[in-house]
Amino acid sequence: MTQAPLRILVLWADSESGNFGVRVLAAGMAEIARAAWGHNAIVEFQDFAVGDSAVSFGARSVVRDIMRSDGPIKAKMGQYDIILDSGAGDSFTDIYGLKRLSIIIYARRVAYKLRIPLVLGPQTIGPFRTLVGRWAARSSLRKVEIVIARDRRSAKYAHTLGKSAVGISTDVVFALSQPAPDKQRDVVVNVSGLLWFGDRHVNSAAYRDELVKLVRGLLERGRQVTLLAHVVAAGADDDVYAIRDLKRAVGEDFDTIVPATLDQVRSVLSSANMVIGSRMHACLNALSAGTPAIAWAYSRKFGPLMRDIGWNLVLDLTDPSINPAVDTLALLDSLSQSDLELDVARVQKNARERLMPAVALLQKVGVDAVAN
Image 1 (cartoon, one colour):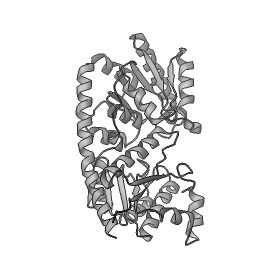
Image 2: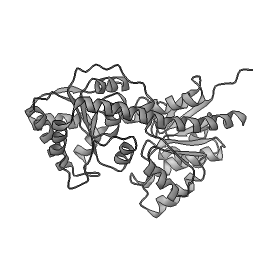
Image 3: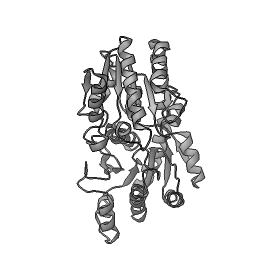
Image 4: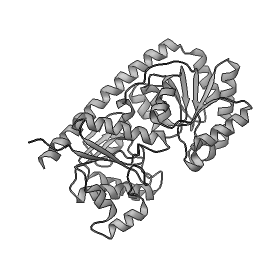
């Protein structure tokens, strides 16, 4: 008798999102799911809002679901054999607010009540800065069969929350196939609308000034600059609007890429000699596509993940001793392209090896799901 393919729901991912980091989560989680559970596994995605799914997992859906035994979230999740929770990459924390965290934890609670195996796929864990957040996180982790952190710091943090058995992996972007190299661009700069327009993570005025200095410095050195949006159609955080303002501030027009697909993003990044990015997945996409990247980091998720895979070209924008434009230009002046390419190949190998234990952990859950 032929075994029916497993049905997998990847939470907090959307293969059609205008945020290409979210698309990476969808594509990468699907790759490791199929590596673990077979290429015939049915993998579908559910984000907070309507996307791949016609159902929203937002606050209103949670309220409706709490009041009914056949609510929209229960009905949706009940269709699957395994729930693979991506944590939206870095959203298992209270730094984005307790509302977002509560939705994530509620969905996990539903999976537990429905007795559907629940796995936390490779993701950042924490920080939790409130007593309520820490209490909710501890309670949530007790209901999860397997937790996989994407860096050692996250794994240690999970231990402080009472989860002793935590797998350590890396970002699922390294599960994606590498585009064919076609080095037709020089420096691709990713401008973040998140940092350009808001002060939640860094001083936006300082960030804007540093980007203008960076681009002018690149032009003075005779470097060709391409501007890449990694988040599009995202309202106030849209990279496209930030790029528009940057071009006005510099007083130059540039080759500008506003991608429509994840494949296009990865092809553009693969075509560059160097990427300078403020969106973490712009940098990770570049490395996984074979291109060195200088990351302008703005949160805890950047540094530990990059260091774990052996990539050290990370400038912490929250460090007052850092001069992002000056330091980046100095790195470009001193680094050998051939050495960088060797470093990228080493990092790719390291990262892909770190994904293998994650796949092995998922396989065990698949065996248990079939048995039940």
